[in-house]
Amino acid sequence: MSHFSSQKEMFEVIASDNLLLDKLIYDEMNSDVVLVKQIASYIVKSGGKRLRPKILLLMAKAFGYEGEKHIILAAIIEFIHIATLLHDDVVDQSDFRRGQPSANAEFSNSAAVLVGDFLYSRSFQLMTRVGSEEVFSILSDTTNRISEGEVMQLMHIGDSNLSEEKYFDIIERKTSCLFEASCWLSAVISGVNEEQIEQSRKYGYALGMAFQMVDDMLDYVADAETMGKSLGDDLKEGKVTLPLIRLMQQGSEQDRELIRQVIEQPSEAYLVDVVNMIKNNRIIDIIQEEVESYTSQACEACSYMPNNVYTQALKEIVVHAMSRQH
Image (cartoon, rainbow, N blue to C red):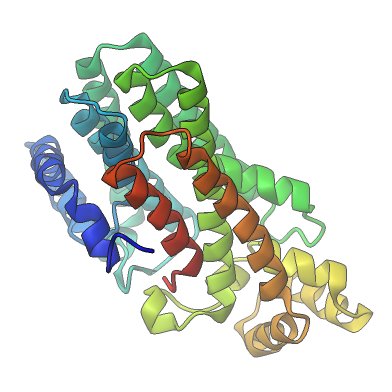
C-alpha cells in the first residue's frame, strides 16, 4: 500500500532540502549580465518538475547522508538539465516548452545557446565546491555523454532505418545517464558500499530509460494541453522514436511505406493516420510492457537501500513515472 497520497507528498519528506536547493539555484543564477539572469530566471520559473535533483536529494537521505554536498550536486544536475533543454529547443526549433513560449522563442536562439553555456560553466564552478575527484569525473563524463546523445539524435533526424539498438543508445545518453549520475553521486558522497553504489546507478538508469520511453509514447497519445507541447512534435521534427520503429517492424507494408514517407518528409497532415496506425497495431501496449520491465529493475534496486520513507518515495516515483500523463 502507498505511503503517499500524491506526488507532492512524496517530495514533502525533503521539503527543507528543497528550500535550500531553491536558494542555491537562485543565488547561482545571479550575474551582472542582465540577459543571463533574465533568461536563466525565465527557465527556472517555467514550472519544471525538477525530478532529477529531487531524486538525488531523496537518495542521499535514503542512505543517511548528513552533509551539505547533496544540495550543491542537486543544483549542478538541474543546471546541466536546463542547459540541455535550452540547447535542445534551439536545435529542434521548438516554440513552446511546458505550455509557454520557449526561451529561444521569447528571447532569441543566440541568447538561449549562450545562456545554456553559462549554466554549463556555472555547474562546473559549483563542482569545485564539492572537492571530489570522483564527483568531478562522474559529472564531466555525464555531460560528455549527453552531448554525444544530442549529436547522435541530430545525425538520425529523418532516418527511417534507425534501429531499435541505436534508439536505446541515444536515449541512454540523452536522458538516462543524467538520472543515473544523480543517483550515483548520492551514493558516492554517502560513502556506501560498492553493491549499493551499483544498485543506485541501476535505479537511475532504469528509471531514466522508462521515463524517456513514456515521453516518446506520450508524443503520440497524450492530450496536448496536459503535455504542454503539441502532439506529434517528434514526428514533425523528423525524430524517429520507439513507436515509429515498432510500427515499421509490425505494421503492414502499406503502413511501413507511409511511415517511411512521413519520417523522410515530415508533415503534420499525416499525424492522425500515424496515431491511428499506432493504436490499431497496439504499439503502446507493447512498449508499455517494456517500460514495466525497466520500472521493475528500478524497484528491485531499491531493495538494496535502507528501508525508510525516502526509499519508499523513490519506489513510488518509479510507479508514477510509468503512469504519468505529462
